[in-house]
Amino acid sequence: MQERKSIIIFSSEGETLDNITLTAGEYGFAEISVSDGSNARSLLAEKHFDAVFINTPLEKEFGLDLAAFAAKQGSGVIISSASKNCGEIAGRIGGMNAFILPRPLNKNTLMQTFRFVLLAKDMQNELEEKNAALELKLKDVKLVDRAKCVLVEYLRISEADAHRQIQKRAMDMRVPQVVIAKDILKTYEM
Image (tube, rainbow, N blue to C red; front, side):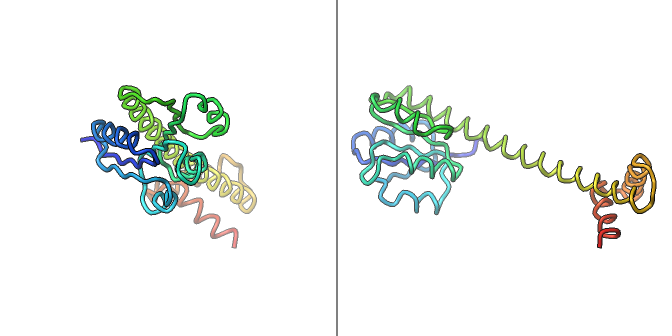
C-alpha cells in the first residue's frame, strides 16, 4: 500500500487556494494544510510536508525565500506564478529542486506536477540514502587501510600480509573487517 503524502499550500488568493486544495485532495494527499504564508517557516519547522505549494506572491513576501526554506526541509516544492514571471523565477531559484507552474493553472497540469514533485522528492531521498551508505562504506575502507598501514609499520610485514591478517581474524571471529581494524588501531595508536 502506498504511503499517504502530505501537502501544505501557501496562498493569499482565496479562489486559487480553493482550486489547488480541491485538486490536491483529488490527487490523494492524505493531509492538506493551508496558510496565507504569515507563519510559514514555523509551520514548516514544526512538521514535515512531502510537498509545499507556494502561490506567489504571498501576503508578506514574494515566496522564493520560503521555497528555499521548504526545499532545505526536504519537501518537494511547487511555485505558481504569473506566466510573465516564470523565467525570472527560474533564474533566481538556481539549482533548487522546485517546479514552476505558470498561471492560470489547469487541473491536468496540477495533477502531473503533484506526481512529478513527489517522484523527484522520492528519488532525491533515495540518492541521499545511497550516498550516506557509500560514505559509511568509504569510511570503513579507510579504517581498514589505516589498520593495514599500522600493521606494516609496527610488525614490519608487507601490505598483503597485513591484509591477510585482518581478513583471517575477521573470518575467524565472524565479524566485519572494520571491527578488526578498529581493534588494531586501538591497540597500536594509543
